[in-house]
Image (cartoon, rainbow, N blue to C red; front, top):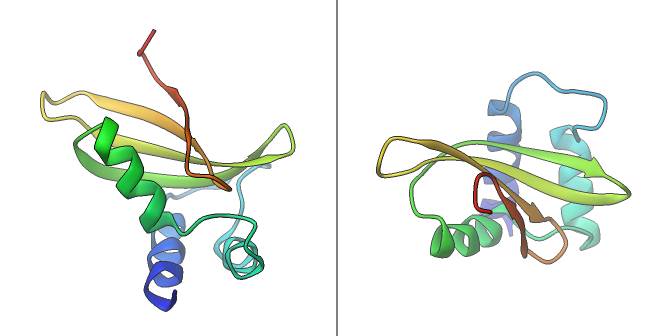
Length: 99
């Protein structure tokens, strides 16, 4: 749990500038402790099974009342792809360009 919390805090901090709907790392840790979101490591593992590549950036956002991890992944072919995953379940909600 501590490792997952540390990874969550680090990646959210690395995500850079926050918009109004972005969740800061302190709030993210609180949500994790409350069990309202899954550890980032679990979500990343689930996403990588479907979308292989190097994780570049993660943001935790509140969208339409639900917490969503937004991940940017550098695909093996060199394209950056954005993936949205439900932060409570880890389920992939959207894969950019995957129509």
